[in-house]
Image (tube, rainbow, N blue to C red; front, side, top):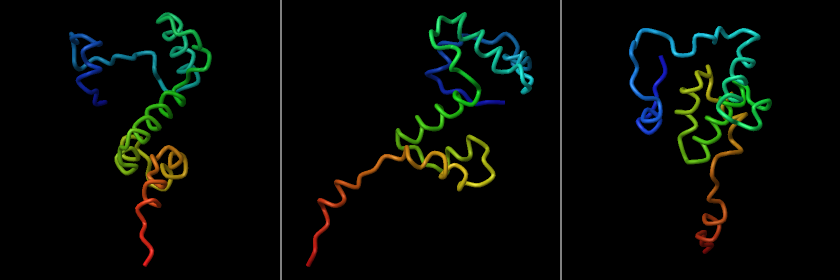
Length: 108
């Protein structure tokens, strides 16, 4: 089961059966990306050949972190066993206040 925020829910509409899978073609095998690309092409996404389950996951995580979400929360959402995995891949997206911090430093 995956949580979806209210903003996204307004585009999805009402479900007729909460027990039924939405993405029935996803079996997490070699055909997953093919199905995803077909859906993207049908949705009118021009660069659908660049889309994969990995790029969708990476975009999700990097957007959350760049907006200031905790790397620990993102690690949990990605189901990483260790936060160090998340840090290694996504630390570069953490917003930096380095310039502001250095301007505020006072030397005695």
